[in-house]
Amino acid sequence: MRNAFVLQLGCATKTTQQCFSGRIEEVDTGRELRFRTTQELLDFLAQCFADANDSDLRLQQTKEGS
Image 1: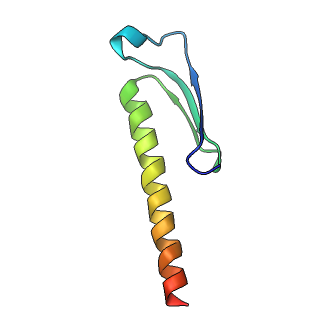
Image 2: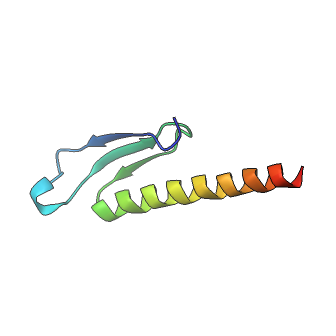
């Protein structure tokens, strides 16, 4: 379930203005955020993907060091 997310949009979402609010959860870690702005949502996603990439690099380095 890596890179899988559950996204619930709240009633304050205004799609025509590209303004999103609601809740997002990263499935494999359970990390979640209630966001009030589109930027908060994008920042959360960026951090999740950065953390996953860091984890992949550490795993690869461990395998190469064996």
